[in-house]
Amino acid sequence: MKGNQKKYNISVLLDMSKSSEFVLSSAVELAKRIDGAIEVFHVKPTTNIIKGDSQLSAIRTLNQDDRSTRAELKDLISNMGEKENLPISYKLEYGNVKNRVRDYLALQKPDILVLGKHRSSMGGFFESITDFVIDNVSDTNVLILGEDDKFHSFEDINLGIFGAGLEDNDLEILQDLKRDSEKPVRHFGISEEDESKNRIYPWNKTVSYKFSKGANALDGLVNYVSRTNTQLLCIPKKGGKSFMFRPSPLKEVIRKVNIPLMILGK
Image (cartoon, rainbow, N blue to C red; front, top):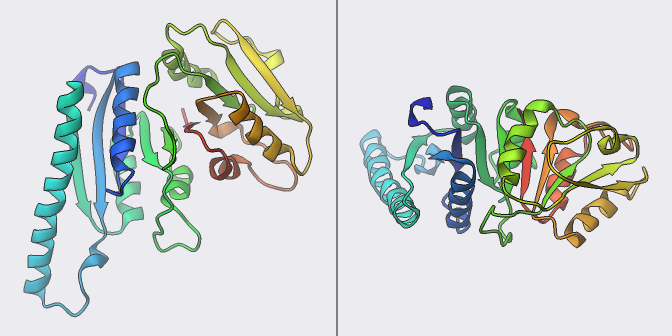
């Protein structure tokens, strides 16, 4: 994949729901901003085949579904790619969604994975595709887009960072996102997790918001993120510390924040 001469390899996990066009268009805007190559990945669960079908009938159903799904994917990709003059490749696989996604990420190792926040059950109790991805990636940055997000450009973006734990290798993508922008980066922290005053960042200005540790600290922080017009909140995955008897606030932030999120896994 590195032969495409682009700086970042961006994979887009699509479920072909009503939000897929928005998710893909946001990935395209990201690719234009940071010099990325895009590949779409879609998994079709084989459980869609009616139980009790004969083997021949099941094969026919799979073939028909494959032609229909590929046509839908190609239509979405070609329209988006031609509009933005950006080639987009795709992979379509069948089987268990969790297994196929895990294997794809292990093989492709994208720099960035883009997906929607849509809660699609995959058999695990209260488990979503978002939770599964967060649990199964370590060196991939994950951009999570909610169904109701109104977000169409990464130009001159209002960028925020949540919590401590930002490592040096997290900074490169943040600098690419901040390129040519004079807007300050907002740092949101809870009590001792706030390290911003002790760290020198490579951008011009950082504005810090520190919240006292307590039962409602996270709710107050999330509300303030929206009030400051932050457009993308970045969360260092490796920096999640426990507070209020919870092992990590990461998934709670994902569920509560109503703006796009970038989980920094590098």
